[in-house]
Length: 308
Image (cartoon, rainbow, N blue to C red):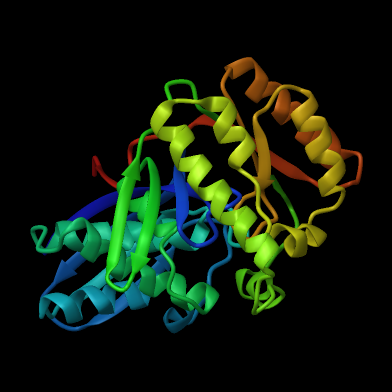
């Protein structure tokens, strides 16, 4: 029998303009799994947290990740998973991706690391498909690898790690309202007007150029979404008003985190990031909506082993 304890961080997907192709990892917040492999067959998952998770393992994102790993490596084993820490589902900070990434990383460690980074991401995408009805890696890749990630393409998977500017603070607010990833994807249009597509392409290029050059102002100008945000912001009370306040306080940008309802802002000063957090809390408190606020740095650290 072999046992590992694994952490995978929360993440923010899309970064405004990078729908399904960009994401970043957040410091300190994430999921912790304890995983055991022994002779036999089958999967058991035990939830040790107060966060509600499916009783049926077929509805848990961890299950298809484990099965994909066993399929890819030709292994057979009885796998027991204990969920020790869990991001609340529907939070918009990569709840399903953190579990999927932790499961993929843990399986790789249990079997002496037969898979590459990209192959682990392929495994983790199975969990994302169960959660959202689509294969995408904009949360799973940063949760596994850390940092800021660009997925240049999916066929084949082509992952590029982008540089993180020295002072890059992220403020995230998670209002206690549920937004289903599947529902948030259903409301998106099937076709995008040319004008919006051109705007989005320009912003993606500008965001990447800003990260490589360390031009924080360009990063802020480019972090705009012409495709998903106009439809998804309806799930977040007072979204446009909140953004006006956040930008006026000195933050570079504010966008929806993934499919929402979490909202994030980026700042180049710690005090600006904390002020953004205060504004976010005041905004939702005034509407009678409970929320949690995180102020963290963007981290280069992805999934990792923890002491038993």
